[in-house]
Length: 391
Image 1 (cartoon, helix red, strand yellow):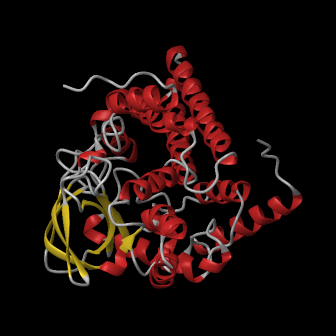
Image 2 (image 1 turned 180 degrees about the horizontal axis):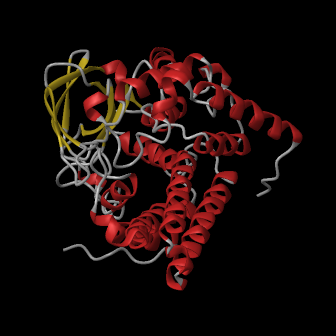
């Protein structure tokens, strides 16, 4: 991997930096550094307007092929944009799931009709998406999904429950894993459906979190319908598509997440300076270790992405969730220790940004596959160890 920046790359950096500085001002100035983890409800309308403003100016979906409305940027320039977006205090992206998960999945596996109908509305910010994977009995064990879909003429009829569905309360569409052959083995008989969220038969119940927000939701499908034209891949062949989506989730989309982590670490360092705790030897060691861990995370992601192709998940990528989930949880602990007794006191708006970080990061080692499940994945799929005995 060679991540040296050429003169052309630096020219792109200057272009991105100038646009972000010019546009994250005026009406959008108040949303800088807002809408991240634990702060998801902040400035929804303003962030939606920002999403569409970015789309109109050609600053969304930068990695997508040109024929689908993107700029076909290589990895280096994707990194540059994420760095400049974080540096400018760009708000949490409402279109993240559509841009980095649904869109690339459709580009890799979708039909021409699906691409023509759905990709432009993702790129413009007109449609928001959510992910219908986890269920009460199928979180880390994704292949255990029980949500069912039955063919009825030109529609699929969907019944079941999804849980921990991020931003479902704002989403226009959900990509849903549903069992379409109940007699098939677990990894077979699953189909990948695109389901409109704004219809009868879809009920969304917010899950209140420690932060007071409800980014996560329960979603109940009770006779919800979607056209057969919204099946991605083959009937009963959804597992392959689902694994492709996960490859994108653990790929370039993690770069933006790491830039947010960098902002959080910078805020903790600044808090240590303000409170005089930066001189504490133990805290200084932990701050340095956090910085080193973040650099390792970044370079490992870049190493994986530089050798990745298509929707295949490289073996080295399997450590990503285990690593960043544990690192981020410990960053929340570090934030509280830096604040000391001040961590017990909020501000006029309630929780401070570092308090939200601490509370939200408690879930990092659980959602999207717990640490225990991640270790099994690394052992079995990356190292070739015997499978864990089943009860």
